[in-house]
Length: 344
Ligand SMILES: *[C@@H]1O[C@H](CO)[C@@H](O)[C@H](O)[C@H]1NC(C)=O
Image (tube, rainbow, N blue to C red; front, side, top):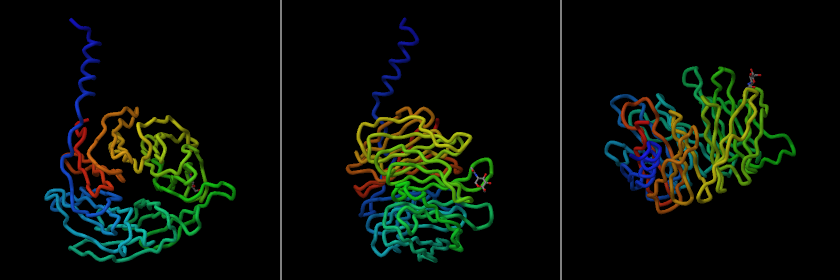
């Protein structure tokens, strides 16, 4: 009789050796590199689950995940690369940000497909905006790269009233903001902002006080993407380097590195933590999507489907019964849809 221990390790070897499943399906037809993805599966029962994608050609595609086809194509960025799309749940409102230095607001109710408002941006970088939905009806907070090279601007929306400009003190040399994440601590106090910068640091800002609470130098290269699990007060960031950095916030709102994870190849374009806090996905320049257990950063799978750099990863929003989906968008113009570890 082999010992239980030996049987277990044999089993885990077997599991490791199994190739990961192929994509559930692939969305083709964006006809341009896919820069950004956002699911909207939570809307009314009669509306199909949707996936929004923004492309290098400047178009936004609205994919119906039941028919696996494009329902609507939105053209509002003058042919300039769209690098952020986001749905404001329950409001039929879509936000898109493009290299035409415009942030467009679309009302998609009743089949409409023209922007209803827009905001001029001053930053020429690729820093995506971030939104925080406020308790009060229809109001939300928006963070976008600001006028000054190292600034982040926070606005009250939809009124477009400026709330504040966040700028590291003179001499901080943080460079341009590269990625933003607005969030509200569970304690119920005011909004905070995590921003990744060109110099490789992550800064935590108190938006109400316009004050830097903490700064962590976690990368040697610009921070390409970050995501934050506010329940565990733990976040993750990636850069062009060969390493993922996991950091946490202590009770004094000080950022600390928890661990760094060495990767096989350099270059992380995007990171996403699944809303249930169980899985982390990374989008690799090496054409691969990697999955990790979020708690221990245990490598779970390498999804090897794309034939060019993966630019973005997104998880479906929770709340709708059924499968949890992961989408990856690539320079190869395809969007892969995966059903992974829905049972865990
Ligand atoms: C942020 O500033 C507000 C206003 O001063 C304060 O009430 C809140 O406690 C601060 N939050 C943190 C995390 O420091």
